[in-house]
Structure formats: C-alpha cells, structure tokens
Length: 171
Image (cartoon, rainbow, N blue to C red):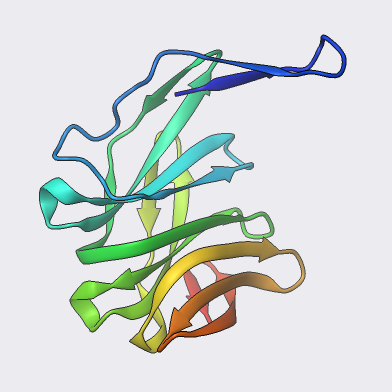
C-alpha cells in the first residue's frame, strides 16, 4: 500500500493511503523487509515465501501516484530463509539482502540484487558467518565503507562490513 504524508497544515501532518495490492497470493509471508532503489526509483521487497518452502524471494514494486504495481518474484535462496534484511548500496546501485539460510546450517548469508525495469536478478549467495546466525534486523549502506550488517550468533551481537563488486559481495 502507498501512503502519502501531508504536512502542509503547519505543525501537524496527516497520512492517507491508496488501495492495498497483493504481491504474493500464497499462504502468506513471514516478516520481510523493503529497500528503496534510488537509481531505478523502485521499491524492492525481500521475503520468505511460506507457500513454497520459505524460499527467499525478491520482488520489484513501482509506485505511481497512490498505487503500486509489481513484477514477478525472483528467488535468491532456494532453501528455507529467515531473518531477512535489505539495504541499497548507492555507490554500486545494488540491493543487498542478508538472511539466515536454514538450508545451509543457519549460516548468515548475503546476496546482491540488480534491478532492471520491473524485475530483479541476483548474484551468488555469500556466507558471512559460518555458525548459526540470526536477527539480521540491522543492515545499512554507509558510503565510503560498504554495507554494515548487524546480527546475532550464540547470543552475542556482532557486526561485519561487506563490499559490493559487480553482482557479488565480499566480507
């Protein structure tokens, strides 16, 4: 759904919404995340698809006025996927998604996405933590440094920087 914020009345703001649009018609999704691609002016939603084995998927949304339309979802992880977080790398014009790969021993993994029109394609998955890794709610692109991912392993909070090159990321 698209929300429009109006602060023209002075000290108070209001928000109004267009009509909600379904982007996955299966059994639902677990909480996913959204990144805004400033290069293509598109929204990218990363989610785990409950209707298809919790595969990690990305989908591109195009906002027009108060409505949004979507392309087709693309799989970035064919195994069960949890704790998804995403950001946009403005230096390389890429979306970076971090997640727990349940199909690979719950390792912390990241993938780089490239938006083209109404679709997104992904490079190869890269493991950044070879132990059970979860709670990837913190991810941010910091110009001059790269993508900072905050995560948890064995109850300890940790962070790691990743650098995007082409369609891959290194840590």
